[in-house]
Amino acid sequence: MNVREVPPVLQSFDVTATPEQGPPRLAALRAAMAAEGVQGFIVPRADAHQGEYVAASDERLGWLTGFTGSAGFCVVLPGAAGVFVDGRYRVQVRAQVDLRAFTPLDYPETKAGPWIAANLAEGVVGYDPWLHTPEEIAAIEAALAGKGASLRPVANLVDRVWTDRPVPPQGAAMIHDLALAGETAEAKRARLAEGLRAAGQRAAVITLPDSLCWLLNIRGADVPRNPVLHGFAILHDDGRVDLFAEPAKFDAALRAHLGNGVALHPPAGFVGALGALGGAVRVDRATAPVAVVHALGAATVAWGDDPCRLPKACKTEAEIAGTRAAHLRDGAAVCAFLAWMAGRAAEVLGGAVLTEIDVVRGLEGFRVATGALHDLSFETICGAGPNGAIMHYRVTEATNRRILPGDLIVVDSGGQYRDGTTDITRTLVVGTPAPEAVAAFTRVLQGMIAISRLRWPDKGLAGRDLDAIARYPLWLAGQDYDHGTGHGVGVFLSVHEGPQRLSRISEVPLRPGMMLSNEPGYYREGAFGIRIENLVAVIRAPEVAGGDARPMLAFETLTWAPIERRLILPAMLSPGERAWLDAYHAEVEARIGPRLSAPARAWLARACAPI
Image (tube, rainbow, N blue to C red; front, side, top):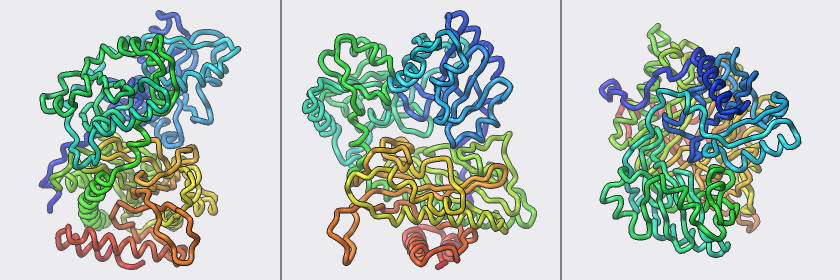
């Protein structure tokens, strides 16, 4: 297949924000603060649904600061404006904001409450109660107790000065087929309602878009790359659901799919419905906006987890089967791309021009050519050379880098298919890599293999108990990476899904059916980046001959694509690691080879040869 025959239609490379836009917008916000009578205002990344990904109309943080990462927030005071970001974005934020106007701050090492207390001797800091959770606000208020500063809910001040703010999304909702879901919406509602009754709770408030879509077996088009619907819901203890979403998004077939147990209302009715509730109402203090608590009126707030999150995380057999199929389809597209890249890399060594955007377009073309791609699962990350050290780098026309001999290229991408969501990272090289890059890559690979081979007791172990295993080879060399080892993944839903994670801060026990990424990395600022990522599913581990009769869990690998052999130092690998890698590559060739053209199949055989 000639990839150029398939025009790229999904990812754009427009520059969405520039540092010079920040100072005048910051000045306008400070004027709005003065008019409101507050001395500060908090601008989060989140929207009213507290999802990680937001619509263009909710990109307040990016509009104000220029920082376009998927996590972070800004606290604006009269004499300071701090932009708080975690380890994934510390390189990126310094490149995207005007450092004379904004101060990047390392989060969670620096938290909002103590920073406000240190920088505002006296005054009121405003916040939009629809954009913050009770957990967030309680933490800041605790830090400000006894200090001169305090918090106050106000109408959103950014919206007052964002004069060309995009309109909210109006994408049509769609039915998610039962054959792919594996459980009817009626059964899900009944199962969750039984849990509410057992807890003595009359209702639960659901605000996360992916929870809403999972519960009702629907999907939407309100957030780029994530097939979710914007809306709120109240799940009652008898299984009924009041759904608050734009009625125009629901056609007759979808309304029939919802059934008599689901009542559709305009979003404007949500606050009034909350006020009419009585008894104990479950609210997730980590995901619901604090405005929900303010609106509940006579009801008693019963703090508890979103009732959908854990059931959604434990996939049905149908969801796992669909995900396997999606990964075979996507794996064939990725392998065809890798074969194409091998040819282009040879041309680069001969002097040809190849850029990051060329690579992104090429990969997108192979996915589109499957005929089954619904969308990308996120904007493809393609960072060559020093850009690879920016963990969530997004190439634009302004940053597009020519790929040079010796460059490492981090390509992190995925697809949304009706039967599954994929996410894969491969680090490639053009020509001869630097020895220190090969050594670091091999350590990252050792960490990824360690997670892939892992078995652990089925006794409530969580991501925090496993995360260090992936880091051990890097730690021995005095190296590390500033992100979690893995995130949860949905099924034709959000590519980042909670509550499961492979992370130092994850306390949610891993259970069969959970899907996660396995993606250790290493990043040397100004030089190169490395990340290797497969998706895995938690399964019950098969017994080991001679082992104790202990219930154990393990990971099933879902992703099938070769790992760059030229970046591996075989002498560093143990016999067990070499055996795993050879077996994985043999499986890649067996599963994916028959799906490829003859030239790509020949390339794959070479790429999957024993190490």
